[in-house]
Length: 550
Image (cartoon, rainbow, N blue to C red; front, side):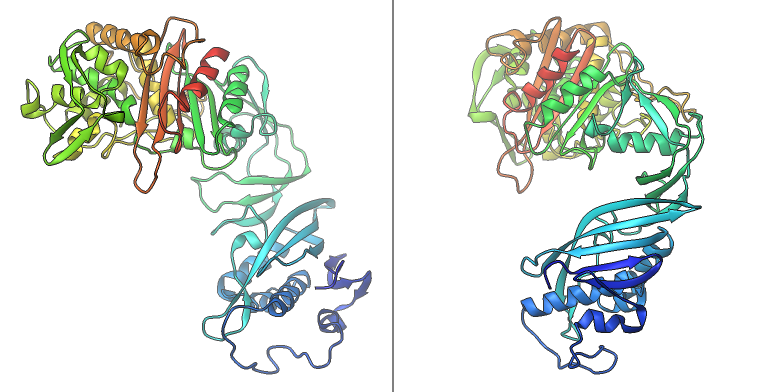
């Protein structure tokens, strides 16, 4: 591809531009081929079927042909240069007609193998208003499986990097008015300043923008094609008057959360006010994609021992001072469980097992012949729902996982007691566990008031007094005693405080996920760091940073 070559659409009439020379539609193909009379259109001849890897020459020529056809507005011809013309054709047509692109310049970069990067500078025009939309994308050339021809591998992101299957570019009157999201003190929240809130604000706008007041403007956006997925605004051609959505976020805590997760490539944290359930922060690394903090359904590891301890106390199997034995290993229904680093102790208590995160002591307290009493396989799930709201339907305000502790059997039942097996939770769910302990009762986390969308919040029974005080005692010791697994991470966090660490093994992952949850004053938080190892080492500092900010 010649250096500086550009494919363009000018003034609504598409053309090819190369070296600053414009070619009209009558000699478009001449512009594409550079005047080579030996090159013919694919409809005029049937090339010999080729095999083997795509050559650099084929990559260059195919990319040039495709970009030229796209720029020419010839969606059918461009689609035939892809390996999925049935899907590509309508998408290419929608780019021109649905997105109202009146002018575009496509500038290819230097191919890297079979990948060709390019930039697009488009002008979008609607109702007498025009604005520029610029972005970068790339295409890949592959060999057709039946024809052997070099073809562009079709995927929606070729047209725009944010396009996904089923989504389309649209320009027109916005579906809902723009909104200004504010924190609990009226501070404006933007995706630029708080990257983890970008998609959340888009979702709030889509769901509650009509209620927030304001007037619609003219925009270019990515229409997700699904009510469950928020549309993505790309360009504002004419502003409307934004409405205001009040969230429960605390800008200071949110800033600390955003900073804390950036230390790791894949991490999530959520913070909740125990006395109300108001969500004070949510952050993900990487930011701007899947909201792992709210929607992640992952094994929570030993942070689940908060619920398991409540179950043990609920059924009269023991309390913080009950004697336990922490052996290096324990077996149940043919499955062997062990402690981290095969640690053990004798003559200890359930509180010591909790703060040192001894798996085998908990299994011996809760399981059949290993313990004092048989429990039903669904006992843990019943405790989780009854007192912690896990498994109920949460109406947070945006999409969120409700947590799941399903009935299990055999070895999976034992695994669930230490946060493995079929148990899945998000950072928000686990933050709520700590909040429930701190307040003494479950308060459903929420991001916007229930009046938005006329939502009903989930409710659960308050923890019985002895169970609540017992859990607070064990979480306090975990955060303050010399042998507590959370003591180092919580050292600078003011009291009253409590915490629990966790490490969750994930199939195919060499290093376990790091979990940590804790509370300080009237703020509770939880974090997960994927492949982070021990709970106190990775997720611990994330939670501590958030709690200090609160």
